[in-house]
Length: 370
Image 1: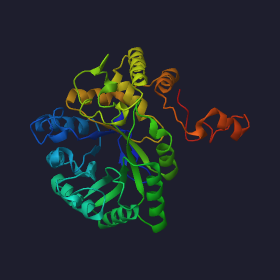
Image 2: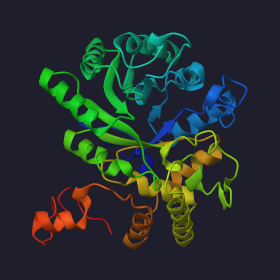
Image 3: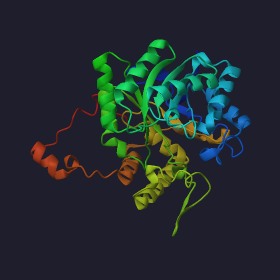
Image 4: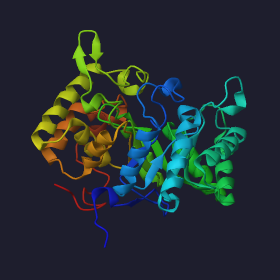
């Protein structure tokens, strides 16, 4: 009998039959060491040899969920991943995911966005590079603000029926779009959205207001990306009068939401994270991953690793438990402050007459952990 580890305790992806590991391997770093197809992704990735070693270690540990995109390293990520899967003979045991939306050809408006033309062309290109005739999960990488949701969902459905795609997902979308997509699919008998890939970490918790409740209500799993906030929560950066210092991709990815606002709260969160990590004898990265991997709605969390050592550190993030007090400290210091009137204490008093009303008992969806 195979040994069960935290990585091999699989869960269903939304309301599908796909079984996925609680940690998914992100292949964004594959082939982007600054010399191979670097582009905007270069300078912090891994060459082919290291990428292969990372892939092999993940699979050997029992991981089965690997994620890439048509545009990562101008297609080099998919090429390497397809090569590794073929070499290892692991296609049937892996849940292979890729994405479309981002531009793949400068000057060609139809080589980007979510229209049917680019959606199908991107999938065909991905299948060639991945050396397979189907992907298990096909993500819309981002809302392009223009393409009608009916066009996206009807095309998704046609691809599932064709056998080229097994399940579909949405990434980087507003909650209203998720609701419209899912209800449109239900009304027409089309393939529903299985999962949402969203930025989520101790310093990026705004999805908790609308997107997480939408996912729970509509039957879609949440798959967080950037759970370590581009290395910030790994303790790779130090606070200075000018902002931050340290090596990594914080500067390259500073446009992402965690770097946009509440900088003082983020540094305070990092301080508490380091304190908790010291108490449990773990790295800050492991504690940050442990926290996000067990949040409501989350089924699998994306991790990226430039080296096998980084991967090993991340894979050890699920084999320990934080106390209720430690989780409470992290929750409190990192709490996202909503400006919505419905979230105010005044509104709760008016709505509930000063009584304590909750949607459901804490034990309703399963045993309450300590």
